[in-house]
Length: 562
Image (cartoon, rainbow, N blue to C red):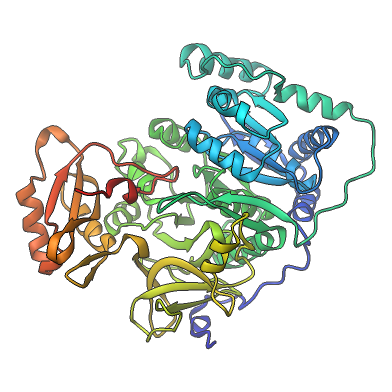
């Protein structure tokens, strides 16, 4: 393959990365804890944790895990928001040779049962706020060990008690639950500290499973992407090399500080924030609930930070917030957009607010996750997803697997050291996802230009066929989002007789009482900028649209026989 994109790489970014230094994530974490013991690793709700403290806590929890009889390769589910307990538990699981299963704490019982049953998790660490959900499905699951954490567990004795009181009795966020045999997180740590010295478990190797990362399920049933230690290590090294030009702009000796508002149970937060920050010896500002924009802005006003990874909805919510101008944005060097398409109107508002353009990237749960990104030294938002990362190959193919001509749309296919080993216990789906020459079919329709730059058109399954013409929802949504008064919108297919399908547009007004934009205003706007077959046949106005944990609109829940 002619890697034409390498000519566009920023100075100093290599064509490939060497990963041999770390045979596993456990080895990477051991190195991190040794090199950065005295640095602050996490700040959360007024508490600081240094790498040395995280190391000791993770060792204690790993000792407890191994004392329970869990065996190498057993799965441990982590059902925690962005609190210090998360990185402690994740490090413990990985270093013990076990497998992390990331679980969305906001899951309903049905979703939780599916993921725990499918993964075969033997243990789970759950925040007490969500323990009642676990109780409803526990009897039908193969779980042997349940650990219940409280929000204040690692916030210090005084602050921790205060936080727990507020969570339990003021906000009343902890429902009554019964989990017979469950152990408190603090008790598990104490038990681990009491464990007698024992032979260290065999260190995980490059081809051992590190993580079962379940797909968002935006187009179907959630599946577990099997990510090996070497694949996650490779992606950390790829991202580190790509972001180096931004890190190089920090004042000499200043520790990189990243705002961790993305959920750590999502692959974007887990790999591109948690692991990457640790490898760089950085500090993560943990945001337990990024949906609370007021609290997020209060935190940002107290901090100096350099990187803020986010999705379009979060960038937009911050940029529109009246307190955003009171934040000191002068230290921001990298605004990293991913997880969903960043809309140009959002990017413009963000740049005007912060002076730091959004650098959009692209990734998948199946690719650990990063595949491509814009150069981090760019001075403006491009609207593309940039160039393939070091060591990554991307081509555009048709349904038969043949490469299409440059500039024509097709499915993005990806090959590189970060691509998953397959779907957990689904060899048939793994076979369908991979091409004969080892490329992963992404399910995303994209275009690659003559310089190798990539642009996403839309999800393949979301494409609308109107009278034989292809209509991509992203194009319509980005256009309508520019109308004054539009908070969000979604375009989906609806059945339409002889034409096969037509475009159905659902619009959420920023101020529902205003009546603006009206249906007539939306239609007039579309008539100016869209050719006939792309224009919505049906326009509806609604309340908030269904979204994934990362804020991506779930079009599949909006489609139907309408």
